[in-house]
Amino acid sequence: MNKYKADVIVTLKKGVRDPQGTAVDTVLRRTGLEEDSSVKVGKYFTLSVSGENEAEAKEKLNKICEDVLSNPILESYAIERLKEV
Amino acid sequence: MNKYKADVIVTLKKGVRDPQGTAVDTVLRRTGLEEDSSVKVGKYFTLSVSGENEAEAKEKLNKICEDVLSNPILESYAIERLKEV
Image (cartoon, rainbow over all chains, first blue to last red; front, side, top):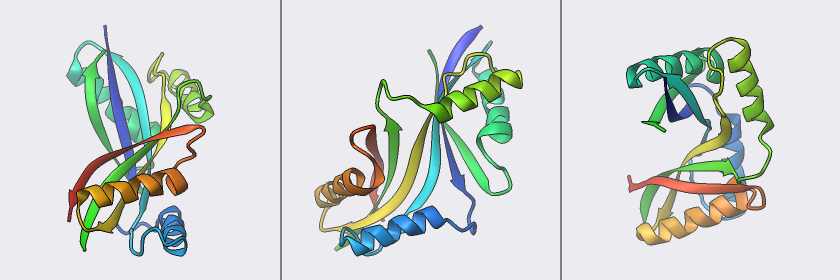
């Protein structure tokens, strides 16, 4: 059984309101840091999973993302930097 | 004035407790999805800034990260995929 590490990024789907992002936009405008920054806020996870091979680890990660890390109705996820450790 | 887009990842510094990550660990163990996942939770932002050139955009992004997007005492940040749009 090998151990694989990956990063997961969870972002709101297109068209879903992003009040956190809007709040950051407002702060950046009011402080004069940036006029139009179109901030979008998401979540970032690093985690490791065990698996016989990379395909099995990927499958497990997909299940974890769908069941635990994201809300598939509102959010989409991307698995990045999957590698054996 | 050009417009640059970038991703920012904010993570807890080493040694800072990560209760959200621990909570996800517990869920993954209880549901039988993964025994030892060592989940770390961070924040993910995409935003755009204006600047004369990439160096100026980078400098502005650093200031935004330090002043608004992260708490430099507890968190570190990484600017990724900076590119002109």
